[in-house]
Length: 99
Image (tube, rainbow, N blue to C red; front, side, top):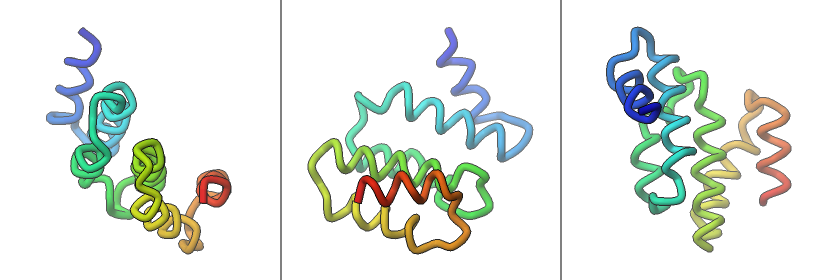
């Protein structure tokens, strides 16, 4: 099963990059079955600039909060991206359009 392989990579990957990427993919696959708070908790390891998927995870969390109608928390995540001068322009632009 592909999800089992991703879970194994997320838990036992040789590098942080592989583990974080696997977690991001798992969150996108299972996102519909997670609450926004569950997703935020699941991706909490990526909430550091040491993760190459920091901005992608933040945007995914914001989108989940928007989908549940919790715009206050979503906007907190979107503002975090928008106000960060290091954020990739595509992700920042997406955050601005969602804001």
